[in-house]
Amino acid sequence: MLRIGALVSGGGTNLQAIIDAISQGSIPDAKIEIVISNSKQAFALERAAKAGIATKIISRKEYASAQQFDLALSGELISRQVDLVLLAGFMAILGPKFFEHFENKVMNIHPALIPAFSGPGFYGLKVHEAVLEYGCKISGASVHFVTAEVDAGPLILQKAVAVQEADTPVQLQKRIMEEAEWQIYPEAVRLFALGKLKVEGRQVSNSSRFKSDNRR
Image 1: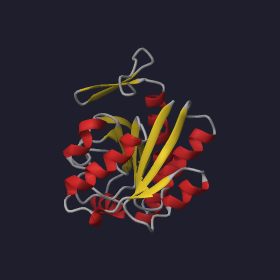
Image 2 (image 1 turned 90 degrees about the vertical axis):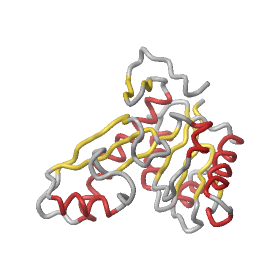
Image 3 (image 1 turned 90 degrees about the horizontal axis):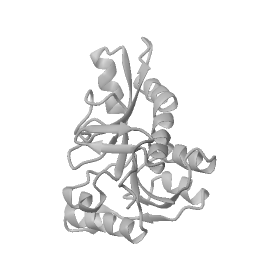
Image 4 (image 1 turned 180 degrees about the horizontal axis):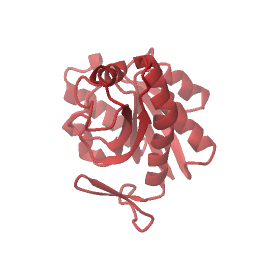
């Protein structure tokens, strides 16, 4: 069984998409073991509790350094024997220490087509505001493996979404969530669960021929 841990800070719509996919059998032989938030106000915690998933709050301000915070997060996930970590609106940057145990085992969904409109400062509505200000005709979402460099890990899946002339940032955000994020994030987790993802440098291959080393 694939044991999943999720890190959240906000509403948790992508977390809900994963919960639903697991309950519907779209992601086989998988279970979310723990949902951790750095904010006790995160509505994602309520989503997890409703689904019967254990939750925990680990706040950055409780630790003297970012490294200690990273170690607290990774320590909790390791204690739960987590195989895959999902960032679902997690508003904190993980440092190198976190990835010592979870290299190519952490996924994130970004609301744009990386490398466009990505990196430090591009999150939430800020991404969609920048897309509209630039006059883009398409945007979309990207699922990638996470590294210590923001939004720079190997890309797993991307999906384009058309930008409409009358779009506001909120409207564009909603459509990208519905047409891209909630589809490709569960699909990326499904591929990982089935052992179909192989990472070589920046390239992520998707084939049933590969046996993933990620769950050893």
